Length: 287
Image 1 (cartoon, rainbow, N blue to C red):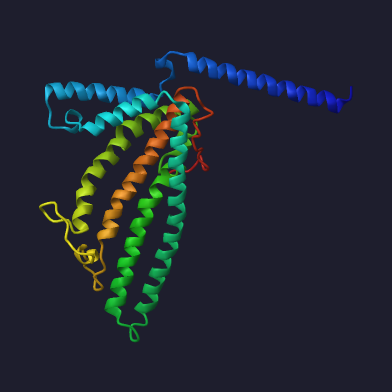
Image 2: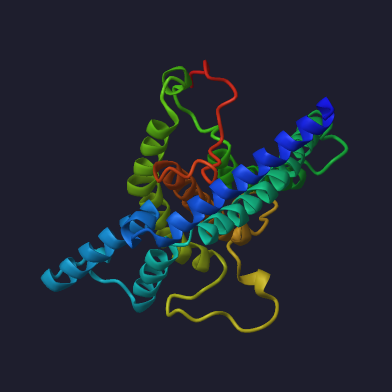
């Protein structure tokens, strides 16, 4: 038997062993008790549902004791879905696809901000040939609106790729599981609730900016932009859309936080193959 044939035989045997090992692991996972197969996110949802029942019985003015019917449906879906690793991983991949789109749009907006601000500087020293008030007002409004939208669409990418400020030379020495514990706890108990609270605040604000009246009705007619809030600059460009974009930005941010919770939860559950946590490129960076 030639060396090449022997090598091929060993490769085939290795592939067979790997397939048998994966099948065994899959069977064990499928037959394991529910409490062993549940993603940590499911345990968080179960704990929150328990608190909600307790506070509903006791009585409180906080949200945890006054959940709407769709909150309970969402909690039930989360608890049941947390037992399906493949489903959670698909949701995580879809969310990170949205973050990739946001990253691409953010790069375009960065160039828009640069070009508009460069135009602002040029016209500042050549205002003898331009209507300075209008051009400066329009350029300023477009620049700050583009910059705000850049941040809103890029924050999900920042969370996904781990470019958020932290002390990386200290963080780099931690094991993967310790990093997962820290991210899972802080994303679940702090960042996630913050995003939910922010959405509850900005949704009414966005509706008002887009022309909603105090009684909750909307203006009639198709010229809706005439009801949008106007900028205080000379050009008075509408700022309703960019203020409404706060809802989109915080929603994308919250979804990426959910993706991070799913990834770090897989690491805690011993499913490192699904816990595709992004490693920092500069472990000695201090911000």
